[in-house]
Image (cartoon, rainbow, N blue to C red):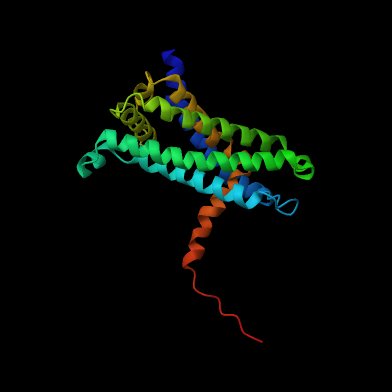
Length: 227
């Protein structure tokens, strides 16, 4: 059991992140015409705007929430006077709100994609797998909120923070921090890590373009000659 824990939470994260980075680069270099979100707006616009807005607000909130919550060193929170209990409570509330928005939006998009004959016909098996994977990952994450409510001392969150920070900084012993966490947390971690693994082979690659286009917000105005 210990060897499985070492592999899935000590080695597998590096496999997933390596495929995530190198796979994205290889796809951009070799298959740029597939570097898109494959929007189905032209086929049917119904429910797309509401589902898209809720899903993207929710998933971006969850992404940056996980990023800040897991990778900010514990000493920073202690220096700011933020207790582990307070941090866990904020994470649970924010995660619940953003997770709820993301879930509603995702269910709207899944219903739209599967109920419309034209969209369903153009949906590839990989798209269905991706939607299902995100849905399961999201449900597991929301389920951990109820589990976390049973122990508000913040110890579990601190252990997950140490695990993530050891992985990012290439330190050994990362898997030891999650060896005794409940299986629900481990399942959520595995599903989340696997999203990075399958990222380069799905429509998720358009996320890179979204981050790259942020620079356009500060771009100088274009001068257009009037008639």
